[in-house]
Amino acid sequence: MTSGPAEVDTEPFFLGSGADQRFCLFHRPAGACRGAVLYVPPFAEELNRSRRMAALGARRLAAHGYGVLQIDLAGTGDSAGDFADARWDLWKDDLDTGAAWLRARIDAPLTLWGLRLGALLALDYARTAQGPLAPLLLWQPVASGSTYLTQFLRLRTANAMLGDDPAAQTGTKALRAALQAGETLEIAGYDLTPDLAHAIDALPPPDTMAPPVPAHWFEVLGAPNQAPGPAAARVKAAWETQGAVLHVHAVQGLPFWATTGISTCPELLDVTAAVLEERTHAV
Image 1 (spheres, helix red, strand yellow):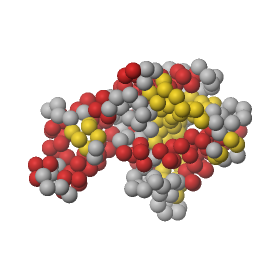
Image 2: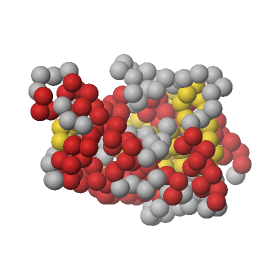
Image 3: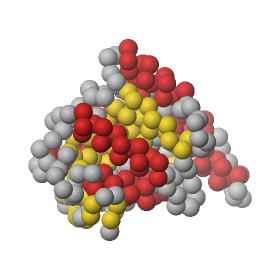
């Protein structure tokens, strides 16, 4: 199995046991180790649609000398529990566990690499992370937890329109009310609990989540020379007023996290690797 200029050795294993068991993939750094990377995955079906790109990205970074840990968070993938057991704070605890595992093996600041809602989780975690951090990698960040939750709830509305149950054909306002009343909702095959929904809904906007280190925001656009959306510019401006640094990178490609079939974005891999190369030479 090769990716980039060097052979990459990947080790699957489980961290913890019982209800705390988390499935992990560790991609050992090829050659001299340059640092450690912890992947923070996206939400629900976006996780499955992004697995190919996440694997390619992890191998690419490992080929450039980074030890990369991919972890299935509680209730997702091959980790213990069902999606209904997932909690935002529990996911942050999982990141703590993964970060500690990496720190025990690689003596270097940790790079958090988050995709979509995982980018917001990475930013939230960075505010209280133990140990030094390296600049963050944020792939196609979600611009608002509340907006993202609304979009996720619309999946139930859209699917209901295709069915024969008029009672299921409710809008997002009614679905939010059901969650507030303590009801767990089945959305596109995932059991969304009130606790998890509230945590996502209540997330502060990324404008106010400036990390203690610089970050790189990567936005995938469908057309060449297209400018990033307004969210990136807004967050960059807000962070600068707080003394934080955000670099915005626009790449052309398919929205692999949302496509029905498996798709990839080679330019995103290239630009991410280039950012790490520049960071290495700047040290």
